[in-house]
Amino acid sequence: MVPDLVDIGGPWKVLPPGVHDATMEEIEARFATTDRRRTLFSGFKDGTFVLRKAGCRTIFLNGSFVTDKLVPGDFDACWDSLGVDSAKLDPVLLDFSNAREKQKERFKGEFFPASSTAHSLTPADAPLGSSMPYFSRRSLSE
Image (cartoon, rainbow, N blue to C red; front, side):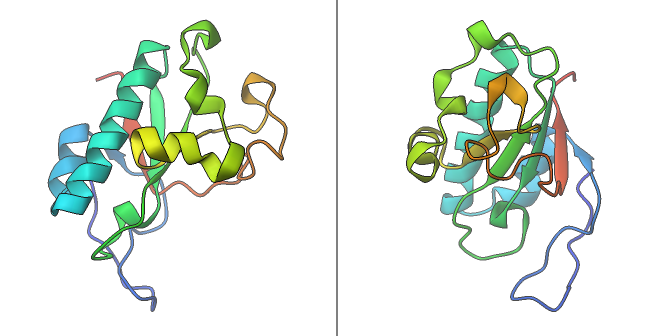
């Protein structure tokens, strides 16, 4: 369930700290509320579908998309590589060049492996490494 957003004194409300389990339907109902947000959600959904086909079971969602910012820039997501068949993984998900330009073109947001060591990535390749804060989690085992 997606909890209520909280005011932390910033320009917009955000999810409270922690990991919050949510279904795709709950995420869509809560955050895909404008044309821009529906576009971002569609890209997130497409990316989760691609990851699921490769065996990914857990994805964390973050960024301005999961706030009440009127026009979010994009979404940030990271995925657990446990059980992922790298031979089935779309190469764009491991392309971090040009500020992840290809991911943003295809999915309207960014997907990072949850660990900077996933698929032999170096910290320079995956700059957020394993320290990325997670605001929401979408479990694909449902």
